[in-house]
Image 1: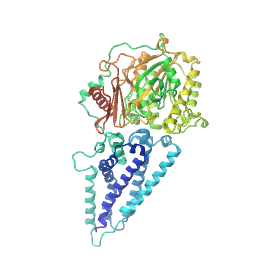
Image 2: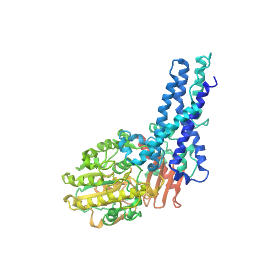
Image 3: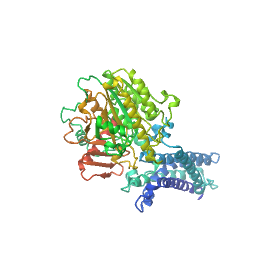
Image 4: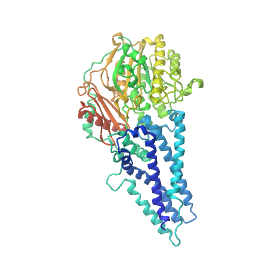
Length: 621
């Protein structure tokens, strides 16, 4: 009897050991960051993380413990041990897969695996394109190693299931199984305290990496899936009326005047809206970044209109797309583009301009099904979509699809046939991981930062060639060109996930439609990607009332924020940048990550209010 009924504790111990081994693998995989932690931090990672590890272990034990109870009632003919091994093998494969996926994604994304990558399951090839062959081989080896380790743990800790002792009734055995099942409630909720365990319970350090390392990945994925279906706003910092009032202070009108940048009497100009993949301000010279990486953009800043303090609303392409084209803020733990029912209720530049007689088209060298972008673009009213399948196979010389010079050349050929006035959107891709671009290496080095630097230089270079040819075309004189990044990037410098430098991006206006007096103008107002929509529409003498989260960066700044303000969010956190500086906040730990000395408490409260109100708006869509 002692051996049979020790099976459940041994099984629980097996999963707990396996999950802690996965945590150790994470620390080894990111060894440079682990070694940079303060002394004594690593043991605390395991100690503080134990509650989430135990909770995840309890979830993994639910079905096996239930099988043990049913098997005890069913008798010896029931294939109990075979089913237990089958269930354990399937769960072990799932946990190993989540663990390895987390290893691959934490570096570029800066947060532990949650439900976010599930939106990429329909396009696995696109999702895997970020990883190079060497990394894929390493990850495959680690996945197989985890499976082997799990099997060794199972044999050593659990072993075979002992038979019931002679004369021990099935009812009593089932009752003992139910008792073990009931006992799982304690680790499931992380203890006997009133509030069940959550991520904040394992956050113990001022170093985000240490807190992230303590999180249990399977638990995090399950929790994120649960939160995605919850109608409750988890970001309740202030009374709703106070939060709404503070958020509205950024959009309060300060005067009717806005700077007019276009030539008088132009009529309806064409708009060419080019979104640049991962163009971080850290590599843009005129924004104070490295010199020589973006000579085209830096030259345009002297001949066009440059916005010097614009921040990406989020850190993924699909989030940047919605912020730019719909003027809608990002969500810290979700992405509205995943919900066609919600995106159908968003405003869109293409829809507004099409209603004004514009023809519309969208160009991208990759697959538009990726991250559910196609449903969003079709709902937006684009009349023509060009994507990877529309390019010849020999032109698809990048893992993500057609390289940027192929995309831009296609546009040069087709823009003369586009009925004016047109609104044409193009989204580049060559500066996305793994940064394999068809050009001679400009910046020496094989590390990630050097490869990224070279890819940005390549896209900037082919963009310059495109614009040089475009200036000779008849449509150029009546065209406004908008150049903006979809988001920033951790490289160079491997910026932390919250770092404002990661979110600062270029925004430039150029084209023949610009008035000569506007050339070389610098706009210093702080703003977000969400503000591009209203800024553009007002230049076209169109209302932006359908874009309530967007404000005109060329209009007088609101009285409460005389230099403007930019809100951005990352996974379960946000930042607010103003001329006074930046404050970043961790929603899980419920504390400030970093705050510049001149930043007021009001700026932090504004960020909390903005997140509360914008997420409430997302839930209500």
